Length: 177
Image 1 (cartoon, rainbow, N blue to C red):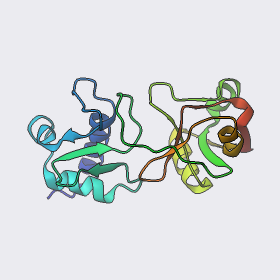
Image 2 (image 1 turned 90 degrees about the vertical axis):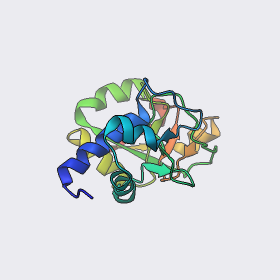
Image 3 (image 1 turned 180 degrees about the vertical axis):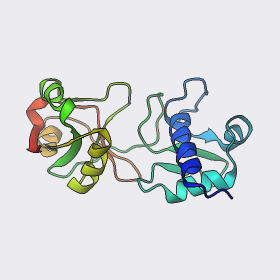
Image 4 (image 1 turned 60 degrees about the vertical axis):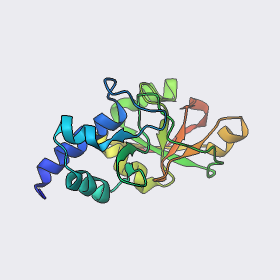
């Protein structure tokens, strides 16, 4: 099995696209993609897929029970249902973002844009890791308890990412710049 880090990183990014955003694939409602398609059309092998799933620090991917299919747990722009259950969120959640985006976010709130949901984190450490990918970090605290009490629906993915349709500005607070 290939252990070249840059090769695996590239295949991981390709897999993220193929499982979340590929509009040319006819995804079933549950969001699983046949691994056979990835083998035949995209240069993956089972050992490569298994290593990506096993070593992904965010736990973004999962196989079905017999390993014949794989899906992303969240982050889709294609319309799929990964079996999320509405769940009461913690009192606060967090969202890390970049300073270049903060003015816009504080005017419009957090929007899902092309994705199915806005992604939120239960702790500052996770939100920091996400936010740093986009530039100089700004940390937002979300008053998720008030949102929930006001009728917003929250979901949690199998890997602990909190999901919601949007976060209006009245629930956002900048806690670090």
